[in-house]
Image (spheres, rainbow, N blue to C red):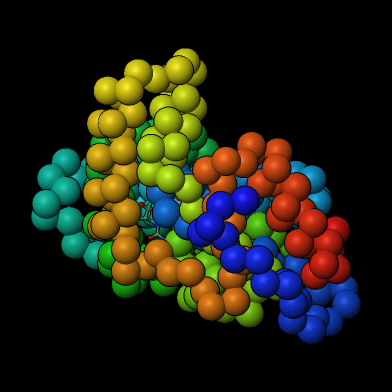
Length: 238
Ligand code: CDP
């Protein structure tokens, strides 16, 4: 355990038996939200909804038709994203366009470079929030993002805020991307990118007052998943 973690007794809010459970997982870039949320959903038979993938999908589609991101308007982005839906795949809900699942293009470096500006657009945020909320109407979900516990589901049954040391976040992201151990120079460059994106995303990356803070710097993926699964057990859904 590190000094940054809080260890309050987690007090679940009262809930109606039989209603879907909502778990919100927020945190800065590459803090392990998506993979952790996916495995928690898998373990519990819930669905994972990755809100960031929707901002990325809108950005990827805009890049296909509007090559000059500097001139993008809110209307351009909403037009480009028209028809994008969430489709069930494994334990996750993933963005799909009329042409099918968008797949790995949403993770491209060009998308990552422009997504934060797209995510600042209020009507784009409303569009994402509506899709995410509708995915939780009939199913228990684990939703990851930046503002899930504050804006999208302020009454979520469990809110978790994941943080990790930027160097460690960069190392993990590179391991995932390169499938090999990165050099210190590569980690340093990636750390710089992550810190810049954290700054661009700062307004919407907010820890809810009732969120459980988990510092994952020294935790394995399995340990993070275990902790959240145990907390869901307290809520009554484990
Ligand atoms: O996985 P990573 O943390 O790198 O990013 P992501 O979750 O895929 O989100 C991509 C981008 O979408 C972020 O950099 C934010 O700009 C935006 N985002 C947001 O504003 N609000 C959310 N709830 C989720 C993502």
